[in-house]
Image (cartoon, rainbow, N blue to C red; front, side):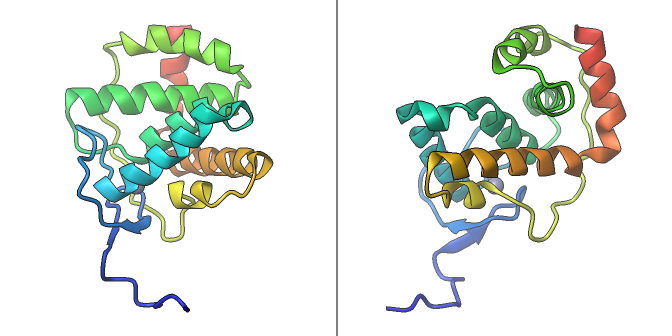
Amino acid sequence: MPQNSDTSAGMEICPDCGARVPVSDLPGHAYLGASPGCWAVYGEVLAREYSDARYFAVHQLTVDAYAAQHPGKPERRSIQSVGVHLVALYQALELDFSPAQIVAARKASASNRAFVWLDPPPPDDGALTINDVVSAEDAAEHGRLVRAWAESVWRHWAPHHEQVRAWSAALS
Ligand SMILES: [Zn+2]
């Protein structure tokens, strides 16, 4: 049966990433700005990564891209989350840090108290989201999509790149 193109019933738009996702009754996240439906799609992607090493190869980028794309509202935990995950995206994408280096850097970053709130640029229409990632048909496509998504999230934060680079330099 063809899908109804009017999907407004039972669907919602995630306020932070703009993805159209099924309405979910599951709890969302305490401080990421993800709708419960978007958070549920992210859970599917994580389950796939945890169950298959070929998918897990890009797990770090998945976590950092998702958190950076869902900054939420200004409060201590979200400030910390956005800071940690933007520093990690920068280190992975511009400095070519390995996942192991990023995990080590994250330990320093997690206790950093210098992070401040960065006003998130408004979501782009048609931005890559977790919806694109979940549609991957195999691990190679998953890896490509996660990389493209992470790069687009990092570009989206361009007004704050200088600040993020300075945080990364101060932490290393
Ligand atoms: Zn979302």
